[in-house]
Amino acid sequence: MNSRKDNPAYNVGKTSNSFIKSSINTGNTDGYLVNHKQNKDVVYVDWLNPQANKFWTDQVNMYVTKYSFGGVWTTMNEPFGDVAGELADNK
Image (tube, rainbow, N blue to C red):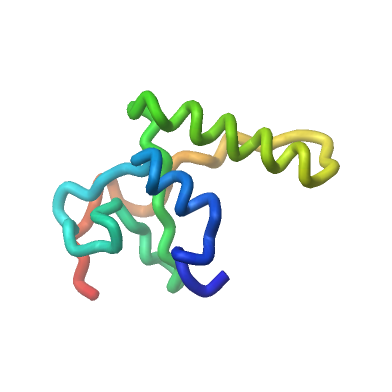
């Protein structure tokens, strides 16, 4: 997928307002906190938002019904990197 508009999970998360909003980079697409590392634009689920639990549960349930797999690894689903907090976007 080359565009967010073509990504069903992103569109559902956007509709349910389930992603972390940026506090300093409000010009980012849809106003979300975006990680631009390795030329990938990544948004993060806002686990403090009550809508996030339903969004995540629905996405996992959809995946489970579509694909056969043995488990879900959830230990790396939070933002990580070499800095603490959000940096000003210099793009």
